[in-house]
Image (tube, rainbow, N blue to C red; front, top):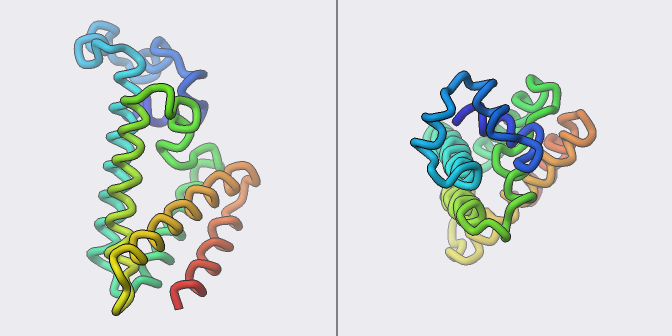
Length: 177
């Protein structure tokens, strides 16, 4: 699964063949079809679910340890910037590449992405809440943050620089004030 996630993230769903996933992971072909009888589509949907869950766990950890919305946002964007730099900007969002290629045409993959983004939005809405803010306003703010972060990851990858993440961090922190 980790190999499939990494390959889909780095080179896209369409450019990643099952034989490459098997070769790089060392898994036997029979096990792939045992666990994913629906083949690549089923593997792709599960890869999106697992990757979304990993991001959600990261966000939940930050929510638990950060004492303010600003600290939460700053910590998350700095974590992403470090991760991007460590990969030489070959990595980005662990689900965006697959979703851009396959949603909405492949419903299981699209649904996994929708659920993942919804879970991220839920955590962000709690972590970034302001006193007196309505639920609708809090969710709208959280969705805006998720969208801004996703865009910054794309720009960072294209530019080979963490600067877009730093720019989004500075802008979002001003908006939180």
